[in-house]
Image (tube, rainbow, N blue to C red; front, side, top):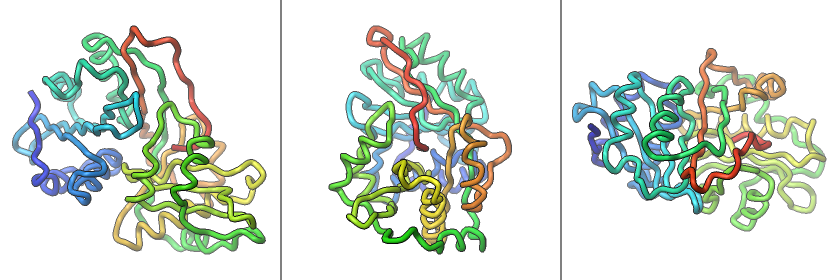
Length: 297
């Protein structure tokens, strides 16, 4: 069984979920941002395993049309009981048989096998992409982070927000197995870029709807100047000063390579906790499995 949560009860659910932070960060911030926008962006359907929100073990959010077609459903979830998670997901309407492409976003890796078993066997999905990430919470303003945010940029470079005209550049440079709706994201969330002397973005970070400081990229000619670390620290400082919290995820395979940047930015890995993004499609359409794209998400 699955209980559908009315939008007016989201603050009550968020208050209960704080005990699961930071492990439920993506789900929590999707819900929080949906609530702040009166469920216009992101637009969610929310389910729990109990009508009593103060005793639930599972929370699942289905984000509708979060990415551009062909993806029409993206799932965010957290659970302390695998059987409960399975029961909620297979409740009528949570996963729709008409969905041809779907993504399961930053789910605790310990739950992914349960999701795979259900979606592959009952809904005839097959994997087309899978990536595992390490979690780096950024929930405390520290002196080191502020110092990095205040670092002088390379000569002739300036910092500013991204603009809608830059969306084609974002889609070209940040290689993903899906296409984000950048216009919505830029409208509702924080984003910062470093511009060269021609006023062209050469490095940028964007806070996603799930709270992650992601969608990052630095042009090859500007790598080695720690622009990503500077922008990440600056974005985190701004979020924390506004009373919010954020985090960064890094592909598990890239954690060591990114260590210098993360330490410079003043963020550190949360235990050995891992999250997984899983993209699936109906098996009759499945031709190949996608592998990890460059950039951090």
